[in-house]
Length: 416
Ligand code: SF4
Ligand code: SF4
Image (cartoon, rainbow, N blue to C red; front, side):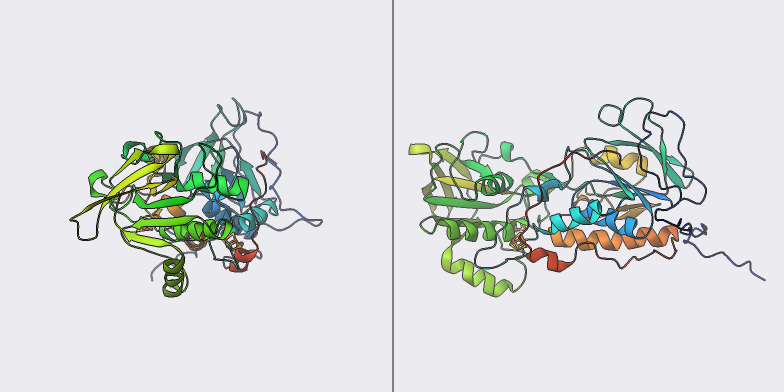
């Protein structure tokens, strides 16, 4: 008679059960992480919930951390930057007469979800050195930016990788970024809109009369081996262009594009509206040259590829795409997680789960959905079950997208 396997993951690991709750609140063994200088190792106390190490404090990492905490796990969230939020924290609200579903305010909902969860310990300006230990992991925070030498290694039952993407640097392209003050990347444009609530030129503080967006910078480009579409930048550019027109109706905006992809809900109506207010040109300018009064001259070929055209603009915005972080191979090595053919992280390994734009280019809403799916797979792999297990919990409901809330100012968070 075949032996019956205990319930658990496919490798036959025992299911993990949530510990009994103490009267008066709190979960046994889930103490605030304050004793950082004690050098002894710190395996989880018997009966305490397993720990998940979440790497990355952008929307994907925050979403997963909130799901794990809601389900009763202990979470260490390690973020390399000095604040949470990742690239999404730089985005401005694009609402004009109404919400245009850019997703920027979903970040604030994710931040609030994590702040409400005492099981999540956030380590900012930190990185984790990870080792496999049998079926699990141990990790130490980098003493250079973590709690200091002698901090004990911690054990984690699984690792959730959500370290996001690197923005392509257009310095290598002949489009004038880093040369002319009035050539910005899309994220630099967001910084200005967010900080000023209007658009001015870096060179002289004037509202630009003519603005050009150049799409697909660093994406869909065989010359540099970036064959992928970055998924977010068409919709982001069109929403930003509409917002600029809303703020400055006298400003004329031209968008140079290859294809207009992933423009969100009701794409036909949205594109039709964009065509009425914006000048859309199917072409890729090849070069940017300086012009009088801080202007930028762009040259491109007409649609038939026969005639070279040239115009001057007051401000040029480069829609720089996503690429895998330069040190991703180093990050993945101790986790045993491979990369895909484009160099992004694979989806899943042995107790390692990747989600969000570290896996492939995606929008904020897609990263949140991807993270929730991966978090559910991690919970299933751990066989985690207990009275608080709630893998369907949605820490960032879509309704949050209409709040218009900008993420709160950065705040320093350490071991709580
Ligand atoms: S989303 Fe648009 S701008 Fe971005 S890479 Fe794809 S086609 Fe190009
Ligand atoms: S309300 Fe939120 S989702 Fe809507 S446009 Fe503003 S930031 Fe974007």
